[in-house]
Length: 586
Image (cartoon, rainbow, N blue to C red; front, top):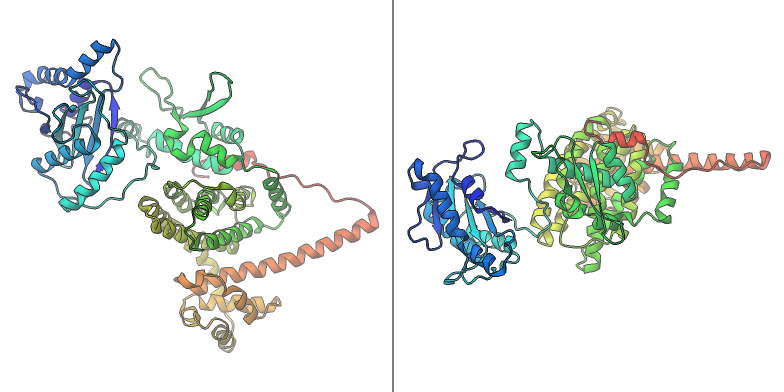
């Protein structure tokens, strides 16, 4: 059961909608199911058609009487005096009777402070049912004694009451909110998107693009530049005294009002963590340390998999931090920071991964946006390394090496599972559900990335005798997981990877001993596959280190003979081509 509290200033206009046909003739049999005492007032849904408009005006005047008296006494308008709360049952729930909806309405106005039980001076209100699955509660928020009601936190209180009603009426139990969810699109916004043939409303479209831009940018100037390059209108909000930027609003080119003017949405109206102050908390990390990391990663760009290996390593480090199991508040702030940085990494991965993986990863990133926000304030400094690794993916060569991409996505899956469990342990029901939804898409991308490489490795599996020898090494080194590893369909691929590591100078038992310390094996559905990517990444890193050492020795020899210095390497910069890749479909 979902309540949605809002306010307005036109009683007659809201009543016309509630008792009217609806925007698409979806309203059937509109009528009042509950109300405060209304002696002699007609129900506009139960009068002849020729009396309908008169009944609406009469009801509006009656509801507004305390408002008018307060305005006369104070000599000024009462702002936002119309209180509106639709209450809808969840899809699949049984339809409630009028009597049941009446009791729901009375409990909602009582719990929110609009009209407490037994309070004869409470606000005037009505509850209108015009569909099987919901009612609209409307009140004028001035009491009979002329005071405004004490309804602070009414949205949260309505949510809590609905959770109790669900239990008592045997309805589907929805997840409690924590005031971190973004504002949902209004009915008119949804209707406009449908008329224009768009999948998402302007609000949702702007939110998704703002998240992607924030993940790619290092500071607010770059954030606004990326948004502008995507065709989004940016309107800064300036402080009245200092003239400094204190906020911003965004608009699309085709979302306009009746006068043809763009409809702007503030950052905080898109999502709580998209306000400028919250973004600055993350952008403030662009210090010398971050720049130094960027330079080091840029130096390795000649190695196609360097950025993906870096992301893999930071994802594994984040997994270890999240699974430490401590309940200290300071540790929670660090874990929340890992969640925020992981959200950014997902968005950047969605535009950096091979093209066939991008749709699933983008869906995972969009779903995880909800899991990224909780009531715990993040210590963003704790996740600087993971955030920088995500940004560096934008300057990679789009993941040409499938092994490194598959390894990073495997680590991302484990981190996402850990974050989902962390949220669930702390009662963050909506965040845990969003993480699970994100996991479905991320697993699909990981499996798509892994399938070709695993098939190639399995096709080159060593002889049965060699596999028996390698299986013995598994039993001796990882006895607790040996049965699951050898029964995994990915075992032939792992045997090939072990043989290749051995050829590169890394004996199987030593390699397995290094890999067996990782916690993922305890919960992995396919432990052999996890070991494949860990082993392939470790082997590639050993080869890369040897190549860098050889290049370093060669460079030293050249300096000794030519006495010339090495060229300087610029820091990672977001290039125009990288911005273009942020567009959907690229």
